[in-house]
Image (cartoon, rainbow, N blue to C red; front, side, top):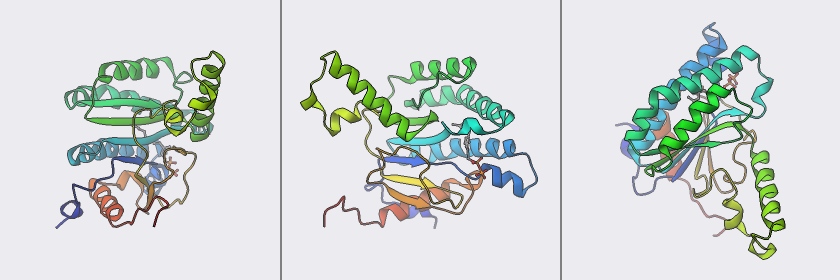
Length: 241
Ligand code: FPP
């Protein structure tokens, strides 16, 4: 009996978001360079995407690089960029064949050109897919995303394409990177940290939080199943009784 057998397939979270954390500590415990932890962490991304896809999860969001991660040493930033390119390149065929749509959350313009090119072609080649949304947050900040939406709404107000009275929750959500996708149902953060770190602030308004002490490179699909079983035991009232 595994947690997989306990999952009620009729009550799945539609949108799962994951703050990957603990790659550095995982490597340190083994006296390996931090970048090794990121490589292991990337393998887990593939495992978790496959497991989520097989369950029928509609949207899956990963925090891969925050607006604050530029403060890390250059060699670590380079390694993260390299991993993103490598995984996009090696997984794209599989992603396409499985009708998965890749979306980027964040502003990729400051990323190296090679990374941008790789991402842009992955976005193009999967733009018509609709079985699952795979959201990768890159140079992403939740407050930045909300400010960007406000600015774009302001522009559209000024040029008359919308009116003040048009501004409501639905319209606002159309200006977010997750346009067309629902809110986060389940937010997972491994590695023992109990914070949201500026991730998808608008989208997580009624998310159920699942924190785990497991470090991300050890976060297997069994851990995902465990998180979903925990989610299914929650009483979600959305402010009601
Ligand atoms: C947090 O661990 C992890 C990150 C900041 C990067 C996560 C990115 C990847 C796994 C890269 C690959 C992404 C894809 C989509 C293939 P940490 O370094 O903060 O760990 P620590 O808190 O233990 O130092």
